[in-house]
Image (cartoon, rainbow, N blue to C red; front, side):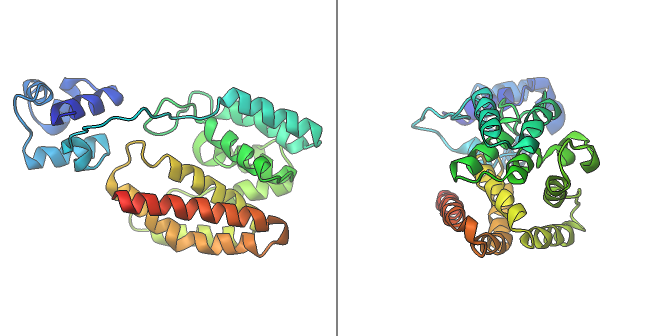
Length: 271
């Protein structure tokens, strides 16, 4: 694919018109149209601003894609995962999980994963299924997997969650307050230190990071991918140690470390 095709594809993915792109860059819509038709190429300054606008790397715009592979945003159907989680919860009498499933589905209704049309609920259900596949049947862990983002993303308060106090505590630990460039390092550091003291929260957070690493290729800029890699390498060894030091989670620690470090190595090589 040419530069023009890349620009057009990225614009359409973000549901933007040529006029909107033109206004954002301070150029005419005719200029954007000529780029997309490959009649002219944007200069370096405009390429950088296009990359910022689309939240991708400059290489995502300028590199010619000679071979295209078919990709999938999802592997499993979220409604099937919901049925599986609810059936398992009933079989193992996981009362908090049963309450959490429907609450999470309703709370995340209408939300999508970044840079995709995938319903957001796919993510917490994925974590719950991830835990169950590692034979973790602890009610509070599965319930917190399902609810881990509702306070941060849905305007729900911890005390409003329809679960017991331990589950609420886990969700509270997994909720990070908003940051800016000035306070980000201090807040993020304290956030991970608190999680590292609770093996259950550490387990959920590592599953969360594994799932998020698999979706970094959905249009994240190289700068954001780099930041995510650095954050993972800085904070997650302590979380993995907390999991490994808890006997019942030894197998989970091995699997999570392997998945996380494999994904990091893949991104480093591709970058």
